[in-house]
Each structure stands twice: as C-alpha cells, then as structure tokens.
Length: 455
Ligand code: TRP
Image (cartoon, rainbow, N blue to C red; front, side, top):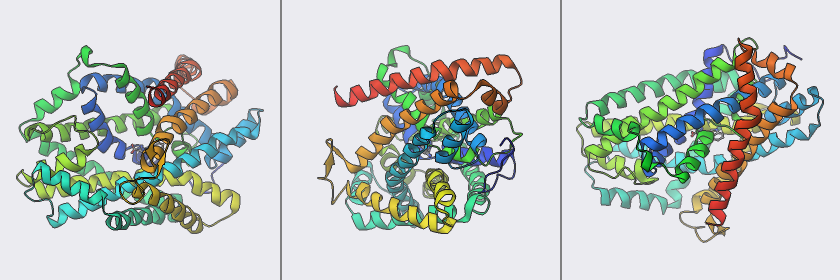
C-alpha cells in the first residue's frame, strides 16, 4: 500500500504540488478578508497572533491532512476510511471526509458569489465604469450590484463554469494546467501592485499599520478571529489539502513542502496588506472599513490615482485568479469521490457538482435581494453558510483530523509517512498534533460558538 498511486493522476513534481496547494490556500481569504480583518482588529497586534496560529495550528494540521491523503491515495472520504482500516480502526472515520465534502459544497456556494463580484469588478475596471468616483458613489455602486440579482447571476454562473472546466480536465490536464498558468501570473501581478504601492509615497504608513505591535490593541476577540482565519486561509478542515496530498510524490518531504505552502500563503496575505493599506492611507480612507474595503474603498482610491484604472483592473484580475484556483480545491474532494465510487467521468462529476453548487449559490446570491427575508437562525443564507462552515464545520474537521492522525494512526504510520530528518522534530510535531492543535481548535470552536449564540 505504501507505493500506491492515485487513479486520478499525480503532480509532475514537488513544485507543482507546492504551487497547486498554494493556489488553493491563496484566495479571497488572503486578499479580501485578511486586510479587512487585520484592519478591524488593530493591525499589528492581530498580525502577530495570526502568525502564531499559522505556525502552531495551521502547519501541523496541514501536515496531518497531506499525510492522510498521500497514505490513502484517494478522495478524502475514501482515504480516511482506508487509512483508518490500515491503522486497525473503524471505517466510520470516512465521516470526517463526508463532512468535508459537504463543507466544500457550502463554502463554494457563497465563495462563488463573492468571486462573481470580483469578475464584475474586473469588467467594470476594464471598461472604465469606476473612473472618477467618490466614496459615496462607490458605495452606491457596490450596493446597486448587490441589489441586482440578474447581474449577480451572470457572474456567479460564469465563475461556476470556469471552475467546472478545470475540474473536468482532471488532475494533470485541469488542476495542474491551471496552476502552471495562473500561479505565475498571480505572483507577477502581486509584485507589480506591491511596486506600485511602494511608489505611492505611503508605504511606510501601511507597513507600520501591519507590523507595529501595540499590546493594548490585542483583544481576545482578535485571537479568535486570527485562529479561525488561519484555518480558512490555509484551506484546512475540509479535505482540499488532503485531496491535493493524494497526488503528491511519495518521496517528497511533507514537512518542508507544507512549510513552503504556509509560508507562501502568509507572504501573499502580508503583501496584499502592504499593497492595499498604503493606497488606503494615501487617500485618507478608513482601514477598518470592513468587508467593503476591497469593493468600495479600493475603487475610489484607484479612480483618483495616476494609472489607477489599469492597476485597478490588474488588481481585480489577480483576485479573480486567486479565487479561481481556490474554488477548484473546494470541488476536487467531491469530484474525486464521484469518480472513484460512482465511476463517473470527470466531466460528468464536474457537471453534477457544478449544477448543485450553482443552485445553492442562488440562495446565497438572493440573500442580498430577492431572498433577503429568508433567515436561518436570524442569518441570511449567505451569512449562515459562511458561519456554518468557517465557525463549525472547518474547526470540527480540523479537530478530527488532528485527533485521528495524532491518536489513532500508529506511530509507525505517521513516522514513515512524514520521514522527518530528526526524531526530535517528529517528537515535537507529535506533541503538537496530539495536544496543542486539538486543544487550541476546541477552545476556539467553543468560544466562537458561545460568542455568536450567546453574547
Ligand atoms: N483558502 C482559500 C482562501 O483563502 C479558500 C479555500 C479553498 C478554503 N479551499 C478551502 C477554505 C478549504 C477552507 C477550506 O480564499
């Protein structure tokens, strides 16, 4: 069983795996969400905690996910079952894979709506819709978009089709090809924008905001947000990384690879912050503007700067690429399972899943207009799907993977699969995955839920 291959294919080399997993990790979470939650939670204080969370919880759990995927060489559902059997345990562990596939389906439905906004902004920037606008106009334009179900529908549908095309292509002709084309472009665009913001004259203010640590600014809530976000941004807890790990080369080191992925993801989030905040400060805008930071304040800023239309277009193009490569990984666990278990072709699997996420996406989309009165626990469908996945399903998934790998796998299995150079590092990882990560996640999970439901 050690040298098994996945029936879906394998990444061409270690770097492709790193880039594909980075493509999954780097998405709306990094460019849209990270800057605004950092802005809302006091900048530097938040960033420091976030970095700790990535290292202490994110990296060890990502190693655990890759480990299970490569050991099982199948979709997360089937890998969890296989690896549980190999360790002498019950096949019920497949349930963690099931919950993950379902979470991917839920996340996709609202992720695709936000990605649709991004596509709309790419087109809008390109056609000059946002030239010479003030903040009031920008707010109205964003509001008008949300209230227009037809327009939202067009872009949401387009995004679903883009993802279906890649999934239909399979691991090598779909996922790997998208990775090879989109990831270099994403990095190039990111550095162009960084250079632009360095030259904006307000780089120091942006830097200071992100890295100036003020202990007073640190709140308990910021810690919660940071840990939850570490999960979301690294694509953990639902099997994205497990599925990608099942296509990874047997000889490649899991530890080093995961560090590279987490490092790149963090780097992109920080650079996105360094590209955005100088623009925000340069235009006397509010860094704590919340979710609208990217869709309202940035178009204003771009509209007032030299070359802003071009850079605005490039900026949203980059966000679109990032969202695309992330959404692929949300669908892959389900698609792989359909191919393995029901024997569907990749094309049929992608059509089936595409139609399902598109339908659920309609509910997420309608949350801003036609179905805004349809509330679940007092939340619109969009907010509920976000809450259910980010605050419940992902932490639970991550928790169970940590417990499974730390407590149920035999020591031989994890030691063999990780093949770490020093036994001291292995020992350290084992303590973290058995105690530190599950306890940290359980605490977040409980506090987050408590905060949301009670106070
Ligand atoms: N990590 C991606 C982002 O930051 C989103 C994502 C892709 C994701 N796959 C995931 C989040 C799996 C949680 C779980 O935008």
